[in-house]
Image (cartoon, rainbow, N blue to C red):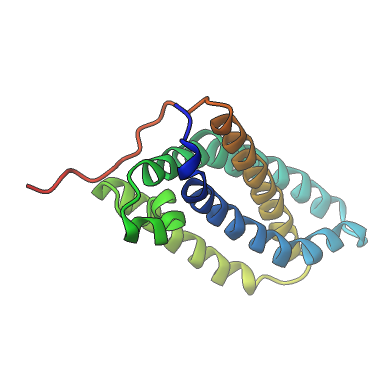
Amino acid sequence: GAVPPTQWAVWAWGVGGVGLVLVEALVRLTPRAVAVLGEPLSVGQWVAVAAWCGFMLYSEAWRGFHRQFNPRVVVRALGVARDPVPWRVVLAPAVAMGLVFATPRRLAVAWGLVLGIVALIVVVRDLPHPWREIVDLGVVLGLGGGAASLGWHAARVMGGVVPDVPPDWPAPRR
């Protein structure tokens, strides 16, 4: 069901905090990534742009964000809003992302993703021009699609439609 009015702020903090992380990355990466489109690229580089951008739209934006990550973010933020334990409210974006207060499997997946992203950033940072910018362009499309998808899932929850995904809460302590 929908979130009671007294809990909207907690839910919005959880979902909005995740959205802020995505928007910050978009603001930082977009100018350099988009600039590469105005450069004289070779045919091979244009093929790489098209293939990479298509891959990132499908794998990151659609499969990663829209189908997996974002439904769970809005559901986990609902859980925090419905049971507003103070420390979980403060950490609501991290809880929504599954980085804290989750099953061991969800914690492993979430932290593995963070470590993988950091490793990719380190590798991509050293790519020569224009390859770094081409990679960044695909990432911007994936993140942009992910941010739009988060907004879509959030709007649906506000309309009373909650995704049918498990929140992956940890087992209760005995």
